[in-house]
Amino acid sequence: MLGFPNRRRFLAASAAGLGAVSAAAQTSAKPESPARLPAPGGKLALLGGPPVRKQKFPSWPNFGASDEKALLDVLHSRLWCRMVAKATSNRFEEAFAKMLGAKHLIAVNSGTMALVASLHVLGVGPGDEVIVPVYTFGATVNCVFMTYALPIFVDVDPETFQIDTRKIEKAITPRTAAIIPVHQGGNAADMDAVLALAKKHKLRVVEDACHGHLGEWRGRKLGTLGDAGCFSLQVSKLLTAGEGGLIATMDDEIGEKCFKFQNNGRGLQRNFTPLWSPTWETRGANIRMTEFQAALLHSQLEGMEERARLRSENADYLTGMLKEIPGILPAKMYPGCTRNSYHIYMARYKKEHFSGVPRDTFLKALRAEGIPMSTGYTALNREPFIQEALESKAYRKVYPREVLASYMERNRCPVNDQLLDEQLWLWSSNLLGTRQDMEQVAEAVRKIQANAAELRKA
Ligand SMILES: Cc1ncc(COP(=O)(O)O)c(C=O)c1O
Image 1 (cartoon, rainbow, N blue to C red):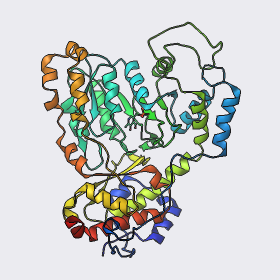
Image 2 (image 1 turned 45 degrees about the vertical axis):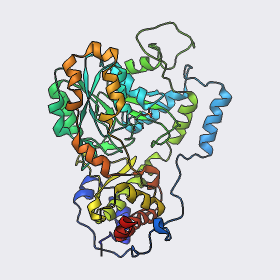
Image 3 (image 1 turned 135 degrees about the vertical axis):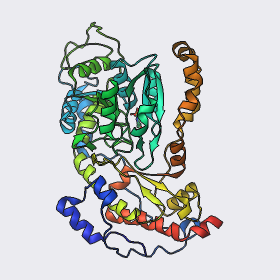
Image 4 (image 1 turned 90 degrees about the vertical axis):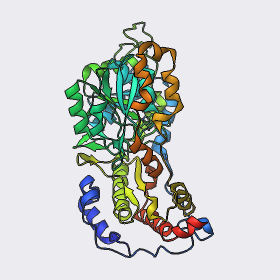
């Protein structure tokens, strides 16, 4: 019989403020005394049996009357662009900056463009190299290509799914200008190590906090530790207006430059009038957020803290159960991660504990049981667009032939290749329900494990 945390004791711990504990609790707490969950037996849904669960998990995104009002207020005001005095965008920036403890926060149209703008403002450009994790979304790398710098991949730490900071130093060359740590899934990259390396080698740090809203490293909000921190507000994210992005910084000059960049290089103050000004102070683009987005985002800030707490409690509860199942390894956190924002709940699947059932068959069986787990990324360092960029006229002009010729070999990431075959993702909205939801996730996994030999033969 597998050991599962006792539900009543868990709830008592939550009520006492212990529910949202992080790394230490997840990785080193002694398992609580075993309690009996419903037996994992029964025929697998994939093989014709009844599923563990028929009801849907919570939907995302959500809205209420205050969101409708916020959008309609902008509509009726006819002030749809932020180039007005007292823009809603300003109010949103101020409110979320306060929640983050960020000195400056600049709203833009996407997380991707937040990254591009940050790199540009920090002076990263052709001839530079930028350290990136391999286990990430394409935008972390595309933003580097957009500045005609060269992304250098660093392999993943499979225990945490974050950049393996022990491998960063080996990737640094005289060309290295910056590091982009990604807080993958809302779990934190090891920022102590990243910041120490950046200091030692005089590198800029742009945090990709696109998953990290309200996550923390040693009590400071993710996105506020580097030179700049970038957030995505795209529809799957923890704060969303369908699309959107943010740049956070504690540095006045970087903040001012980012503000100018998003406004076609115009150095106007925020509450400016008149609408039109021909002062082009610097290079930039129009990546302004619309007032509709800002109004919705401002309204959506309400409840964000509670949602973060609920995700954390449910994730901890789920981890307590899953880590007792041989062959399922929930992502750990580094000790400095004082809050995981759980944009994605990540775990590894070891098929040898499931009679050799391939991961994708396991996921198919899990989805048939009513559990929407999925796989995650592909091998970004081997995507064809990388080679295409290296062969482009611009890259051949800027980078020495030997740098380009050795690129693919230099950027091998064997640990990531294995992780890709093992990764399991459960998206954040699935953590916004009840403890029973979490128990059903664990129950379905156990059911598949109990029937793995039959599943393998089917
Ligand atoms: C890690 C990461 N970085 C950057 C981005 C880009 O954000 P956006 O889609 O808002 O451009 C994403 C989007 O999913 C992401 O997951």
